[in-house]
Image (cartoon, rainbow, N blue to C red; front, side, top):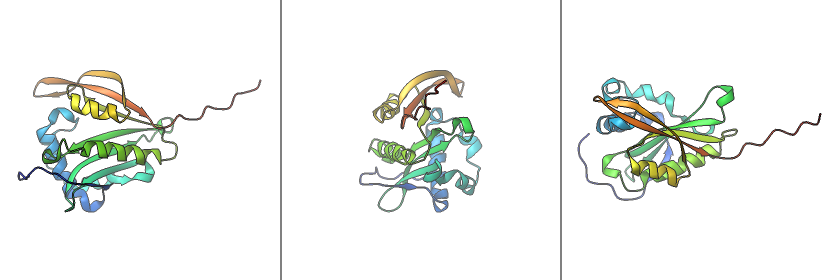
Length: 189
């Protein structure tokens, strides 16, 4: 990616579509290259993948499997965030927030906050979805704070969750309850 001027201005948040695959891959490759400790995927394994391989992952908000993108007025992808609903019956009330990425030129402009808020709003509309979980690099207080401000709470720490260049990075596990699931009726025996 060529360096560009810092971004300032309004963004549009919308679900990613197949037509966004090339822009998504470029943003993802840049994020994996510049922030290797933030992701479990690595740049070297991902850079050779074709952009079309990501399209199936985009899904639709109604399903609980979706990726949202933040676009500038010119339609350029500045950031994205994914939500992947668990598929096993006993875990369908949970979804994992994945792949938070904001282009370096657009960081610290509130785009991450907007993406997280839009993700929560979309997840709240999915029938049966009760909580979101995620992991974040514990040594990145700015991003930890972003999630805390959106209502996520830490519940555990995995030491050395990812190792980059021989250095281990801890991952903080966080959860946000969307709604309290109804309790089953009391049995009268």
